[in-house]
Image 1 (cartoon, rainbow, N blue to C red):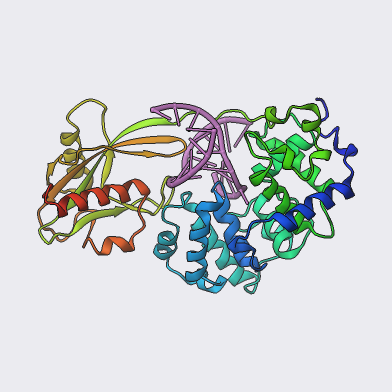
Image 2 (tube, rainbow, N blue to C red):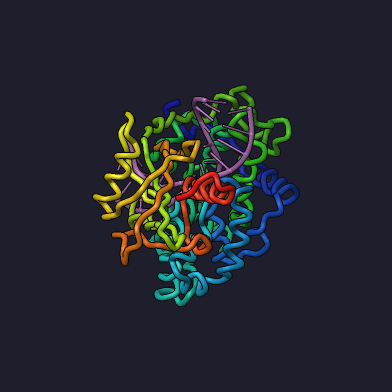
Length: 370
DNA sequence: AATACGTGGAG
DNA sequence: TCTCCAAGTAT
């Protein structure tokens, strides 16, 4: 396969577009971001959908738009508020970038999402895929929007044996889209490709017999649809032993801290926690770290039966949780003391939500006391 | 180019 | 259990 697009010329472009778009017109799912073509709402949906399933996104999208219905509303919101709205969705820099970009649109583009490829690409969090998606769906511009679906679909239709995990592959698929895209309805063309990938041309066991463009598909013709696309494996996640402390002062307030503004789970809140050695004396290590880092002397008990696992794509945390009591102070280093009710206003990583759920439930049952 | 960056679901 | 994700972007 010297020339990856060697089959491009054999596609009947008009028939392909017609089959694809007709199918999408009849079979598309009724999704909340398809009610109109408001560029802002299209934008929000595209950011949320990055590496995230449609079913997961739907409730987040509805809540988010309810809370921040316009660019102005999102631009003027507090970061705490937007992170809380994103809590549990993952990849939290997405929402901070989105707000920064929306502010840029408000301040530099008169509140109108730019419809120029060069301009929209300068916005934070808007890469080649998202730029193409907004331009085509909201503005009807014939720009490619190449995501994982599109690469999978075209890998099969054009029998392209490129490794789609390699960044360099995307531009080949963009070239294919540019050659085939409907100038008349680029929005439906792009969305149909993604919808086809999601519903029919799935990663494993594609439903070729239901496929509206089966007649155009080289992989189907060759019987190699299950061997495509080529996708190299990712590195497996490394394990880290962690210990966390749910600390109460005598007012019954809980001590939490805000994570750094960059890196993993940036700007989210959590219970103080540290990496610990894999061998014993976890409680002693945690106790010592609490003194060193926050200047907090604590009485720690390990009465939480289970350890908590937090699986990221690249790291696995095994978290031992301790409940503890601290003396009342004016300050606890970078830790702040909040009532259990106030915890609800802060955005936590999922693992720490689970920790609090378990600790508070055991406290109520009297199985644990700080 | 390769890696960091989350999460819950499917097979 | 375990592997692979799912409408990517930033660095």
